[in-house]
Amino acid sequence: MINPAIARDTLNLQQAINFAIEHNRELARSANTIESSSLSVRDSKTAFALRVNPMIETDFTNSGRSSYGLLAHKKLIWGTSINVIANKVSDPENPAGKQSKNLLFELEQPIFRNFGPLIHRADIIQADNDLKSTRRRFEMLKANLVMEVVWTFEEIVRLTHRMESDNKTYERLHALYRVTKAKEVLGKITRIDTLRVELLRGEAMSRLEISDEQLMSLKRDFGELLGVVELGLVLVPNPELGFNNLQPEQAISIALRNRLDYAQAQQDYEDATRKTLIAKRQFLPDIKLVARYRHSSNNVYPYSPGNRDNFIGLSFRTDLNLSRRRIALSQSKIEKTSAAETVEILKHIVVREVQQQLQVINRSHREVKIAERNMHLAASRLKLAHRLFGMGRGDNFSVTDAEQSMLQAENTVFSARAEARVSSYELPHVLGTLIEVDVGLKPGRVGR
Image 1 (cartoon, one colour):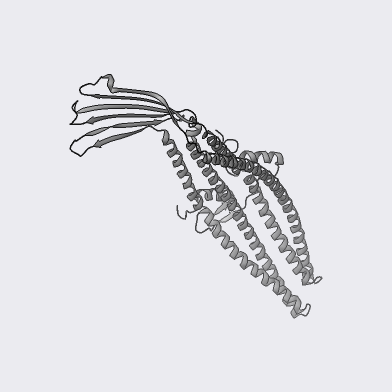
Image 2: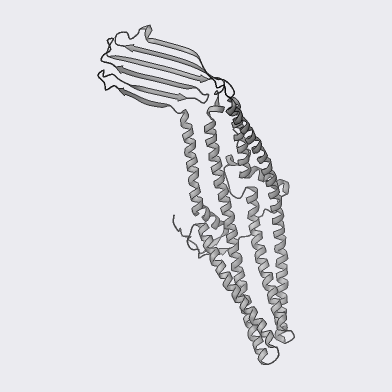
């Protein structure tokens, strides 16, 4: 859908997340790769499907010989290959008759090197794991999109509150400027005091313009995340999520059961292990058990024993140069060792990220309380400074200094609240529980 409309006047964070997941263009494009990987899985399974092919052959020389029939082929996961050929041959120059019928049944069964599902299901398993990898990348992209929506949403809310604060500050400074100008005319204060207030009023106006530009830019970015061209909605802030009571051991356990990148590392190790086993099997002899039955009949001797041919035996092939196989085995062992190390490294990374994020969320909540207390103090100081200045018992320097402290305290509160709400979503993102995913994609469930 191009430029879908949001049929509401306000938008909270959860609604924005749901809308982005449904309409984000980049996420929709990435979903196509899942369909492509699904087709690869289906294609790999066709190797074990029954194939029946027609066989037609015509000789355009003087003999006029022609044949037609069917070829049926079936492969099993144990490596068994079954071929059945049935055809009819017409030969006008054949003195025994004009038609002959032929039936061939052939079975081949690898015994050592290429025996079993390890070899013959390898392509299916790899295609299925590639599909899982694609789905994990899609889910991680979705989780990253959610976090980008959260950050942009909270930044818009923060800037909106900041603009409201800057506008109130400008109005107070404008009123202070008028009072200061009047007192300057009366000779109660100096021109320097008036210029100081006028400068602060100009800076407040400048901040309003800069914040307005930043807000418009963020709204365009937010609309792009949601898949819409313009966003003219009022964003409703959400409270923080209640994840700050988790103990470190509990959080680490949750992360190791849900992190998709950790699951991918486990799967990579599984793939490397399977490739190593296959590489070791290549040193075994390539021996096949072959069984063949052929029967031919014609119009004259349809049941003659001489028309039958039975064979049961062994087929053996070998390659005396094993250098390439040794190199392939060495490479697979290196890949397996590297994959095992990656699993351990990523496990330590997950533990460290969880511990750090728990510290961040606890710190951000403490900073909110401190910032709110400081803002109340700054508001009380500003109120008192205005009152004393109005009564003639204070100068405008105290008022302007209180205005700057109030502005800084409000901005700190807005930033601390936004960081606290973002960290409340960042923690489940680190734990791997931000969005629901198929259990088959999670760690510990990648084996067969």
